[in-house]
Image 1: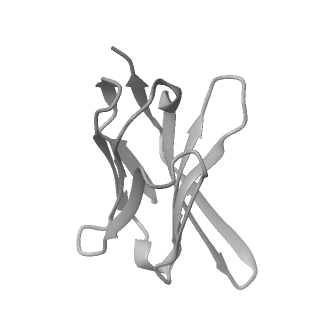
Image 2: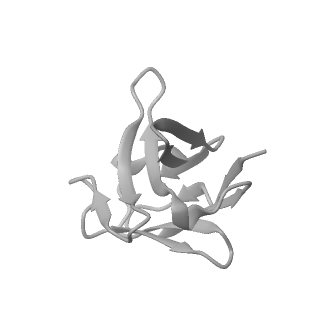
Length: 119
């Protein structure tokens, strides 16, 4: 059974930092493209940061220079380091793992963690 468990969310002041973790079991993250998404209730889930199995990264324009995605293969865990947080970063953040095997898409999601940026 595949599980992605996010942690590290909570309340943080504007300008502050926070690190989200996504502990994964059941798959090997180094074989998957990993991503962090955000979602506002009633709106579509959007990509925040991505890390391919080959080590390439991609970021939403709104977080470039502030957020960093990384992974620890030994811990099978993906991280999102968030710096210089703004109130508009407030959202539920989801971890994602995706891989194509023989043309079939394997796509897994975590349960989400709330990040609130407010004074």
